[in-house]
Image (cartoon, rainbow, N blue to C red; front, side, top):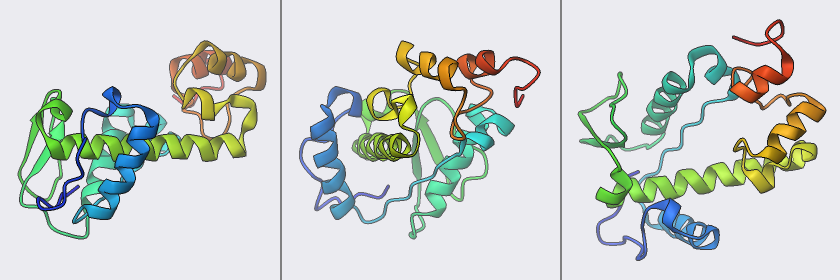
Length: 171
């Protein structure tokens, strides 16, 4: 994400500290005002094949490529800089509390994920994705046990792997 310093929407904060409605409104404002936004996704099969960390790094590289503008420097929320980035980068633990750019990117990422979960809920209503957003709640685990994993579930994830047994696990 490359913010326009002259058009930063007011109210950007740690996405976890905002209500869902406020995140939605800020996401739309950020997308309208940012100079560039890149979104990188990692499908379940890639996470199963690589592991969550490496798939996250791959998604970050996709997001940077998707910017359309070449950044001079990247700020990464977390402790590690993914390998293979096209420019220098710095990792910031709790970066969404330290950097407006990271906070804005976190809002866009969370809203994008929530919207993806709502679409998955339409395709796979038995799992309740719209409600639990893919997090391993008791209701989500019960739905996996009842219906088996859907095509969008990570087969290597603990409760999913246990529900299908070791002989059918992707790992």
